[in-house]
Length: 94
Image 1 (tube, one colour):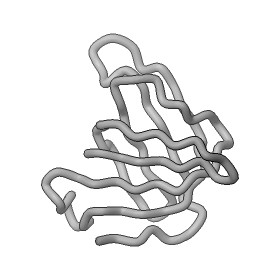
Image 2 (cartoon, helix red, strand yellow):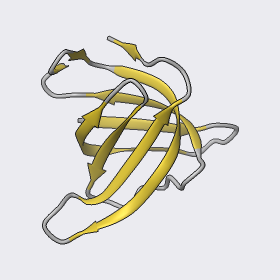
Image 3 (cartoon, rainbow, N blue to C red):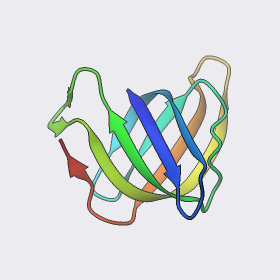
């Protein structure tokens, strides 16, 4: 997937390719290849565009405001970095 993050009250934004590993009512978890400029506690507006446009029963793009709960180095044999987000409002699909 592709994702774009716009950090609240800032001109900072970040976009990258990533793998969506898990999504639920409360948030999602993804892995990416480069160190995210997102730190625990950052609040941002996120847009996720999956390929194909449907990920299970979820339609892309997914838009939500969320807080970063965890950002971690995953190590060799993975996508390198994992990011866990908690939705602050209900995500919008498609």
